[in-house]
Every structure is written in structure tokens, then in C-alpha cells.
Amino acid sequence: MTPPLAIPSKSPRAVAASVSPSSSQTLHDRLRKQESCPAIRKPKVLHPVDNEDLKLLILENISQDAVRAFQAQGFHVDHYTKAFSEDELIDKISQYHAIGIRSKTKITERVIKAAHKLLVIGCFCIGTNQVDLVTAGKAGIPVFNSPFSNSRSVAELVVSEMIALSRQLVERSHEMRQGIWNKQSKGCWEVRGKTLGIVGYGHIGSQLSVLAEALGMRVIFYDVINIMPLGSARQVNTLPTLLAEADFVTLHVPELPETINMIGSQELAQMKMGSYLINNARGRVVDIPALIEALRSKHLAGAAIDVYPQEPGSNGAPFDDQVNSWSSALRSLPNVILTPHIGGSTEEAQRMIGEEVSLALSRYLTYGSTLGAVNFPEVDLRAITAEQGNHVRVCHVHSNQPGVLKQVNEALSPYNVEKQYSDSKGDVAYLLADIADVSPQDVNKLQEMIKHTSANILTRLLA
Image (cartoon, rainbow, N blue to C red; front, top):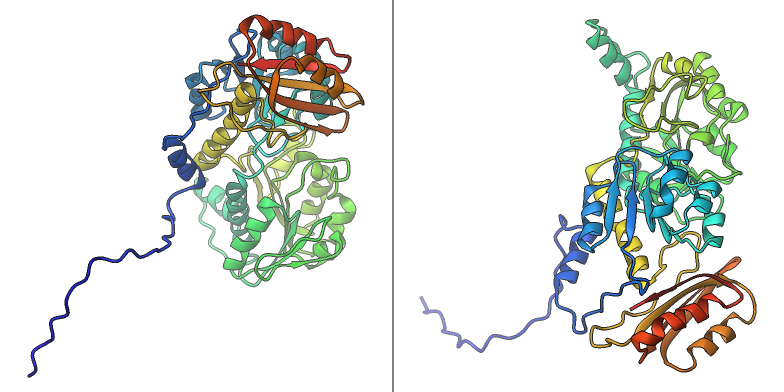
């Protein structure tokens, strides 16, 4: 046998290759890894020139990770596990610069008028209808939320509810706990091959669409705008078309004047005999008394409800007819799954929501950035670096009217304005400007000059 040829080795050759990130690594993990890398130009940590310690009020058992993140930045944080009533908020809110809530605490016009120091509101959830957004904006208070972080948790809950309803799992479990053995298949179905109708094909609806198809379901959806479907899902033109075709109807819409009671007696009658209704959206989207009648008449085979027009303010509080007049009637119905607004209540979702909203609040308080605000112009500037020690950032909220920039720029004219950006939304406009070579003696004078311009709503200087 011919001996193998010895091939001379060459020096190693560099090869460019792309490597997929680990599937177990989340977006937040990758962002934290990036933040741990030393920056070429380290950003300067800015503080209000008013030299007042910032106090935050955090309610409704928001993630402790968010609380610790605020405390690590030197903010004073008061944390409560329960929601506050309007009167409780009015009594306490005047001492705080920021507030974090979930869905139960209502920030009304009365609350905002009593919040003399309030700078920003954080909704640690998807929805913001618990806040008077217009009044907040006119008071110069941006509102931030977390529109994406709990989407997967809600979508998975809907999948579990579809299977539980179609197999009557709640009824069988309740019977077993009472010591009753009742094995049966009548009225129990696989979800494979059934049609899921999704009302609202946003972040949650589209994720649910993919999960449902993986279970072998046919997916149709209705939305007020034309959206490119994922997978084999199909958009239908009208809500009645969806209701007539779907075996399961699930709602994923915000609470708006157009969506209040969008599922009432007429819509329930349009649903297929023996179908199921799932609502993890907002409590006033469904006419609950009409739903009770549809269940009693056996037109619907079951329902899953996670949200209600009125909800108790804390864990352990009763869910009875004092909260909603029909509560006992709804609780008495068979094959109805009732849960206490837990759609986004997973460890993963709450951790990501805590990170997202706490970061948005911190960026506004320390840098003036309003990226992601739902009721406010979105304005941002690149960071002032640590080497730029004599730079000041002007954060000026003002009425959206002619002549404002002329007045502000006249006040800034003795200084070098290194960068400036302004935008408006409705009646409110927001200006950020970084100014160089401002002496400590001039800072307060400059702030007072801008505060006294004709359209001023709120002016902060960060240095």
C-alpha cells in the first residue's frame, strides 16, 4: 500500500464566520452584556440643578428588580404591594417626582392636579387607559408603558384556556376535589382542526396565531387595519364574519370608545353554537350580563375571563356583587374559567416589564429622553460625555405655539449650543438642548429665564 503523503502545514488562516446567539439568551441578557463593555466615551451622569432628591412611588407589587434598579441610581423609593385609591393618591402624590403603577391604580385629572412635583408616570403593563393621558401631557408629564414584554405570557394563557375549555378541565377538577369521579368524553374536543378567531392582530394576537397553528388550528383574524398575516393565518373583512366562522374567539384590543361592549348580545348571537369566548384584553370590551345569558342558554359552550369592568384593589379582597353586580351569577356558571387579571403575571414578563419601564423612567429623569412615551413628543439627544464637565442639558416642555424657539434661543444666545432637538405632539412640544461653557453661577439664572417664557409648561436643567 502506498504510504500517505505528508501535506505540509501552513500557518493558520483567519476565517470569518457568523455565529448564532444561544437560544437561551434573551434580548435583555444581550443588552446587559453590551452595557457591561467599557464605553469609548463614558456618558456623564446628569442630575437636576434644583438639587432635590428624586422620590419615586411604586405601587401594585411591581418587580423588585425595578425597585432595586431605581435605588441603585440613588433615587428614594417607596414601594407598596397594593393599588391606591384616588383619595389616597391625592393625599400622598404631592411629595413624589415619579410614580410606577400597573392596571388597578387610576391616575385621574384630580390626581395630576395634586401632583405638584410629578415629572413622569410609568405603567408597568401594556395598557395606559388607567391614566388621563391628555391631562398628563398638558401638565408636561410623559407616560411610559411596556407594549411588548408580556405578549408571550398572555398568548400562552390563551392556549391553555382553549385546551382547558374544550376538555372541560375546570369542571372535572372541581368534581374530583369534591370526591366525585366523572369520566366522560361528551362535549370534549381536541383543538386540532378547530378555527381560532383573533380580534386584534397586534403583538399578542400575532404570537398567539403562531402558537395556535403549531397545535394544528386554523387561524383567522379581524383588525381595523390591514396586516400581513403570519404563517397561514387569514384576515377577514368584518367582525361578524369572524364570529360566524370561529370555534374559539379571543379578544386582544385596547379599551377605546369604539371597543367598549364590542361583544354584546348581537355579537354573541352571531357566534357559532357551541363556541367559546376568551377575553384577556380589557374588562369593558365584553357585555358580561349578555355573556351570562349566552352561557345559560347553551349557545356558548364556555368562556374564559381574565379582566373585568371593576376589579378589587388588592389580593384577598372579595370578588362579589359589591364589585360587579353580576359577579355571583358569573361564578355559578359551568365551564367558565375566571382568573384575577393574570395574563401578564409570569416571572419572565414581570422581570422584562420592570427592566423596560424602569429604564425608560430613569432615562427621562436623568437624561430627558422621551423615547417610547405614549402621550408625548419622542425626543432624545446623544449623551453628554464625562469629559464635558461644564455642559448643561435643557429639558423644556412648552405649549405648541409659534415663537417659542425664538424666545428660548434668545435665552441661550450667550452660550454655545452644541446640539438641539425639538418635536411636538398635539398641544405639547418638547425641546432638548445641550449647552457648553455654562458657569455654575449662570445655571439658575438660565433656568429662570426659560421658565418665564410665555409658553412654558415645565423646564428642567440637568448638569
